[in-house]
Image (tube, rainbow, N blue to C red; front, side):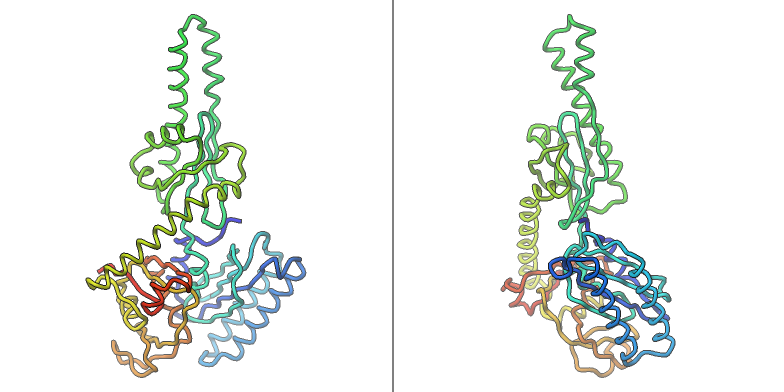
Length: 385
């Protein structure tokens, strides 16, 4: 399936704040290995929403108006999910609701997640970031007469455009009308028509690239055609080209296209992680990077983070100033920035990730076996300044 998560969508959610109330975030696991039938899924959805209801009733610190608004939001969620929401292909659901913030979204997730109910003044986006920041890729398939464009993330693709130019038929017809033409001239005409076809595809990509933020473009097809095509694209498209892969251009389904491109995507991901770890090492020596929660949190608050690296599963308690948003690892007390009494946060890492995403920073998760990050306190950041 094509995931509903994209980098831009994550940032929009992370930036959402409810000044007059709270945001209800609900994550529902629908792993088909556990919930294979529609009835099992419906039962699981109902169970998690019942848990959300108990949380709203029992959570300390809510005002009467906030609790009332949350109960209303929960009814909207219950009604929305109860009216036959499409869960086909979803491994999980993420639901965000806040009438004061004008927010109501149901996202289909491509991977299972743990059940979770969160109430805060912002959406809980950290589970989405752990799945992947949903970087958007383009997969362009070209041959001498066909072209297709598929778009999506590492979790799924959808086809958004295709083109078929019957260039050889036009040339053959032309040849019949001019049977005196030399073979060499005929071949030049063929190449000219193919060149026009590829230029048209390049122009289409250039037009579609406007106002789109991509992780990159991978091109699939026969090597000689792909090589020629890459010489014809404009500079903006060329900057996005990240690699090639072999695939049948016209008859391959979206899942098979992704499978064919997976080795290239995996290689690019591993290379990027290696580069990030090297950048962290160099930055720690020059002051352009920090490691450990105590040093990372102030840089997030100061909006200095370019890339945040987090070990999967890392959580920690912390404190937050409800007035200015300062975050720390102290046990409580007044905020060092404005003197407001801080409040305890059960998972300050989750809050830091959401804040970083809302500041247009990149967030990368590393497996727990990645000792290089574990030795840095399980969290580190490359700084903008």
